[in-house]
Structures are given as C-alpha cells and as structure tokens.
Amino acid sequence: MPDARSDLPLRSTPLRLHLNENTAGCSPAVIDALRTIDRDAVAVYPDYRAITAECERWLGVSEGRVQLVNGLDEGLHAVAQAARNRSPAPGDAVIVEPAFEMYELCAEAAGLRVVRIRPQPSFAFPLAPLLAAVSDRTRLIYLTDPNNPTGLAIPPGAVERIAEDAPHAIVLVDEAYADFSGRTFIGPALDRHRNLIVGRTFAKAHGLAGLRAGALVAHPESLDAIRRVLPPFSINVCAVVALDAALRDRAYLEWFVAQSAASRALVYDIAQRLGLQYWPSEGNFVLVRVGPQASEIVRELASQGILVRDRSTQPGCEGCLRITAGVVEHTRAALTALESALSTVRRS
Ligand SMILES: *Cc1c(COP(=O)(O)O)cnc(C)c1O
Image: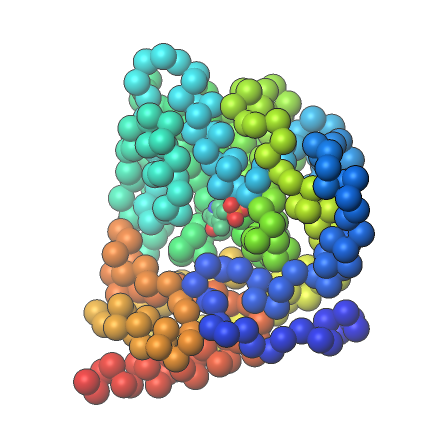
C-alpha cells in the first residue's frame, strides 16, 4: 500500500454507505494540489483547455470528444435540454427501471415526457420492450452501465442496437461506475453512432463528489448541441486543479477499485450465509433483498451511525437496500451491524 494512504481515517462518522462515495476520501495528492491555488488563479475565469486535453488522454479519445461538466448531474440536465431542443414537437425520454432518480427529474425539467420500461424478472436487460417503446417522439434514451441500483451490466450489442434503431434520439450511456466495471463504450462506437453520448463522473471512484467534476464523451458533432446549453464556466478552479491531481494518481484509484471488489465479495458472502438475495455488482455497491422490513433495517442501521440506501420503493426492488462497497474496513463494520439489525428487526 503506497505511503500516502497510511493516514486514511478508518471510519468517518456517520459511515456514509448510501451514496456510493469514496469513504476513504480523495487522493491526498488532490489536497496538496488544492493548496497551490493562489489569489490570481481564484480571481480569473478558468481555462479548461489543459484539463480537457488531459481528460481526453485519460479516457483514450482524440481532441474534441470530452466536455467537462460540473458533476455528471449537470451533464444529465444538459443532455435532456439538448434532446428537447432537437425538435419543437413534444418529445419522450425513455427510462429503464429501476433507474437513477436524476433521469426523471432532468427529463421533466427539460419538458420531455417520461416513458418507463418496467423491470424484467431478475432485472434482465429489457431490449425488446425498449425497442418497442421507441417512436417518432423519442428524443432521449437513458442507459446505465453498470446500472444503479442493481450493479448489472448491459449485455453486449444492446447499446449499439438501440443507437441504430433510434437514430433520431440521443442515447445516453451513464458510466458513473465504469472505473469499477472496467468496461466502457468510449471508443470507435462513438464515431460510428453519432447519437451516442457517454457520461462519466469523478465523484465516485476518484472521490471528488464534493468538488463536482464529470464529463460527457461523444463525437464532437454530438457535443456541439450540448455545449450550446451549458454555461461557459460551470467548473470552478478547485475542481479543475483537483481533477488534474486525481487523474495523475492512478495508484490511488486502483487501490480503491480493489478495495471495492474485496468489499463486494464480503457482501456476497454474508448474503449467501444469511440466505438473502443479491445481485453480483460491477459498481461500488450491492443491492441486497433483506425482506419486507427493509425500511426498518435501514432506520436501525442509521441509528447506529451507518447509512445505507433504502431502495424498497423502486420498481423491482421491493425489500431491497443498496449498500456502498468501498473501503473494506467500512464494509466489515456495516455488515456486522446489518447482521445484528436483521436479527433485531426480525425478533421485534
Ligand atoms: C452518482 C451518479 C451520478 C452523478 O454523478 P455526479 O458527478 O456526482 O453528479 C450520475 N449517474 C449515476 C448513475 C450515479 O450513480
């Protein structure tokens, strides 16, 4: 383990395992870099050229294919707005349930009507119903790989098929957890399918949630429409400096990705031992079906200072909670508490 991490806190209070953050904190190199920001740097509008080029290198794409955003959430708003602007006629946004809540909010804020694809048994990817839902009205299709909250991958070929069948719509592939899955659509597919836009965030694996840094990645023509609806200076200088330092510290990212993989294995072990249904996840979280008392269990854990996410009201997620699987010590503490909360709640 590199030295820089030896001073990591073992536990923050409360233990935040409900928003898939990096509970080890950002790389220490990020804080060192933030300390170098001087009065002049704060006083001027940021220049994004160097950080954008660095991000393009990091993602392995050529010039013009990255648009930085103030957290991927801002990117989701911009994509919805750009999709709406494609035509003055009313339009639809297609959402595959269970989905990240922001999609619905962004689509509605942009004036798009939401069309929901219901979950299939075992959360199998609903390719046929999704293709059947595509119409002349479709402006935007939200896909998430791996999905949040299930952690499941989109099967090979599905994204390309959707992009081909809906050439008149933007197909957004939200890859917020790609650092954990190791899989991405960023590559030649973006040049073949000009309606494909990939979303990335540096909030989760890189631990920059508090500074807000994300990216939209697409063919330069596809990004043009997005750039027209984004403010010119939406990423502040601290985020620029932090992102630069975070991208350079690959060792820290790799350490956290490995911690997450080990943590997920611990969650699977306990779920198997307790006979709880779970879905093997490619993100830094696991969806676990704890049963009809899920909300009570979430409250019981919160009373012990351990925050996990109640997902029981999301379509297909009845009785489920989602637990962030990051720092192994944090996962161990949470699972011990979960096991006792399960027996407390079941006894009562
Ligand atoms: C966390 C998350 C985001 C938002 O990322 P920010 O960069 O923090 O705005 C987007 N999509 C999904 C699926 C997420 O889980």
